[in-house]
Length: 220
Ligand SMILES: Nc1ncnc2c1ncn2[C@@H]1O[C@H](COP(=O)(O)OP(=O)(O)O)[C@@H](O)[C@H]1O
Ligand SMILES: [Mg+2]
Image 1 (cartoon, rainbow, N blue to C red):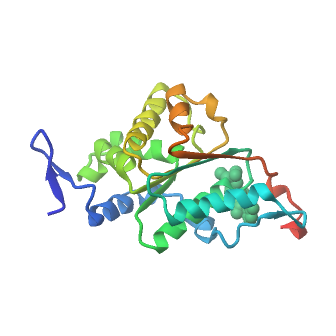
Image 2 (tube, rainbow, N blue to C red; image 1 turned 45 degrees about the vertical axis):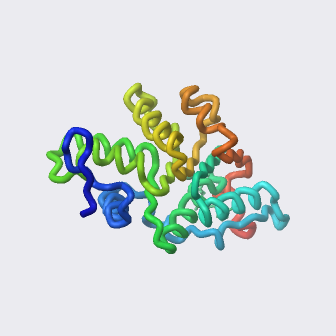
Image 3 (tube, rainbow, N blue to C red; image 1 turned 180 degrees about the vertical axis):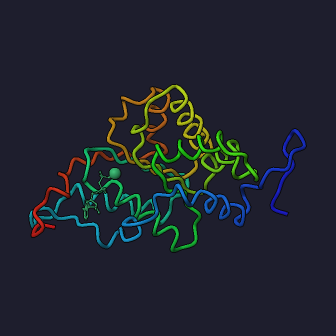
């Protein structure tokens, strides 16, 4: 029936049901980063050369993103580095690939995730999926979660708590998670930083390639 009775006798959507997983993703469509130019960003148009020369670092980033997209099971992939070097592009490419093979994926920035939660405090929720706990459940249990711009949020105690709750749940359940950030991992809450650096689960890649936007058009 796509629902389960929880311990308190309340009906909750069964998160293992593929139909429910697709609904949960669709319910958050307005906050998704999979729109506009992100829809055109793929592995094929991610360039691994710079100034006409092959760049090993960009090739490593592309390969790690492709590996994750082809088999995200029990993996975390984390890119960090300066702006403009393709972190969001690769997040979008992974999301686009997963959608193309029918895997439900939530792809959103951390500020948008927080906005989706805050909105539930202002609105009368009509469905479980529109409620705070329903959205939180979607973020925690999404078959694949891609969080862009982690650390770009205000850093309030509430935002830190949300980040920890989601990442801790996904860490404990080995759920596929991709993260892109401009912030060095050690600057995060130490509990989050240590989970992100668990080598048994997470691949962390520092992307120190230069800003693509500043490249001459002839070099792109
Ligand atoms: N290696 C690359 N190949 C092709 N386009 C790239 C590459 N790196 C960045 N871009 C493009 O440059 C712009 C900025 O990249 P983006 O992924 O948003 O950077 P970041 O998220 O790392 O700040 C985007 O339009 C993106 O498609
Ligand atoms: Mg970005």
